Image (cartoon, rainbow over all chains, first blue to last red; front, side, top):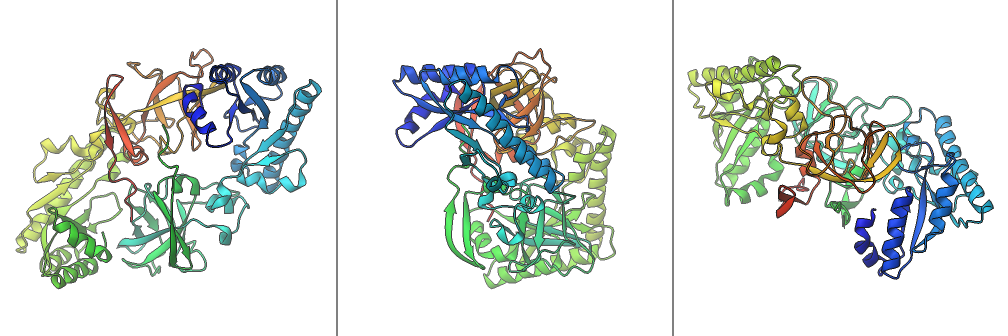
Length: 289
Length: 289
């Protein structure tokens, strides 16, 4: 969110409670100016880099406290607190590494919040958010908000990270075998426009572009089926010669990354067993400008 | 396309000339049965594997001619010819390798067509299709149809494969700098939901998730800006410390793979220079079931 979008943010403020995130004082000041000009005030959280090294201020840099104080002093903004995303948890090699990411996150936020409060700045919110680290929060103190996103559906990566079991996963792609051109090759009608080309994360190696359950109602996956290659409309799978899949057979596939798969769909089918009970529009997809 | 979709294909036949592709005799027979039951006939091409090893019959297997003859004899189908996609051209290491892919493709098709014609089967169409190999067709004999798709827009991969120059490329993503949290790091508001996570193909190494032109109207790219990592909504770029990009600056990015980028958009903006002159809906995206 950038101040060039101020008119849209003002319109949204009329409809909902809204807060924004900043990690740059000049951007915060531009937002403050836009809000002051409109006679409004906007809630803001400061993004803190907890090790992912994407956005966020460096909490351990000498100027960190200064930025927090200066943002708190801006007349058009109301500082709510600090916010982080421990996205590097996805790269953890073991459960212990992942837990260390979660502890480092909360320590980074609470230590900066402590210094800010010592300096007289009110920090009401400490907001953390990432599905892999979410399970450690019950043993931590300090966070007031958690924002996991992927947990709504989970996916093969979350299973690989120990954040979910296969039975927890709620987003599946049903696909049909459209070719069996060789004994060890099966072609499905789901490619990068359906499964997305994201690699599978998790502890240890997880090959391929999804986990194949060999029938729509199969209770467990067939790990001998590897989705080796995605074209736009096809998945090319390596299978053992004795695999019984034939053209026309339907399978269900657990995607590596449910977020980007959802984003490819205009609507999802809600099922109980194999019965479609409702359709759910994906309202926000495509809303990128 | 699978015979379970026969009703939709019949409906489309009322609106347009339509042909389908098969690489499996049982599927062809099921289509023939569906068409015979409906009192129709459907044009069909047989997909031939020319080295990509996705779909397609093996033209050099003993049974190849037999499949062609049996499909030609099916009462509900009218065999138009043979069809291929040399998708392995994207993996060619040099221009000479790519040209060899193109020659192997046409040789594979023409030799099977020759054997089919010798056996009394009419082969009217030899259809090839892939953008990287398309430029060799003027020196080849035998193909009656070419189906390049990517050439409509081109992209960074096609530039890397020598199929296009930067000036030929017609699909760009405009993105805004939303954070500069460290001297060597710039964050753009375009992630995997905008640029897609496809790797760049081409002769030699092409790092990153797109080629960045450092302003919307910049005439040439800044190859010192590397889009190292995509999150869903962000690109994390490594830049030299002297890079002048600031929060709010807008750049244009040449994507690695335009097909999957188009598929993420509901509409495209048509521009002349930096002026938007029209909007183009992406009519077929999301139409996957």
